[in-house]
Image (tube, rainbow, N blue to C red; front, side):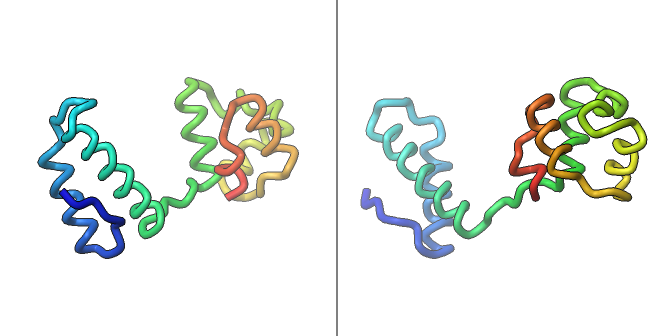
Length: 116
């Protein structure tokens, strides 16, 4: 099989079809190697042509507190009080740089998500 860069949608869909056919390939076999190469090429194409923007900062915070089983009040110390938490999460107040740093440090929320 001739492997080449994915440059067009036609190339992209052809690669997806082959990936589908090779999906059950065993690792460290010719088909398994082909699958690894094609998935890497597809991933690069998708990153270039279908970029996924970082989540909204407020949604990132809400998602993280849900993941950790926390309540909004658990963010109060990092954000300057319960009122500030409520104002930020309702969209009435913007995050400050200090809030972003604290949320990242205490709750491991990706800085890229908070800066978006």
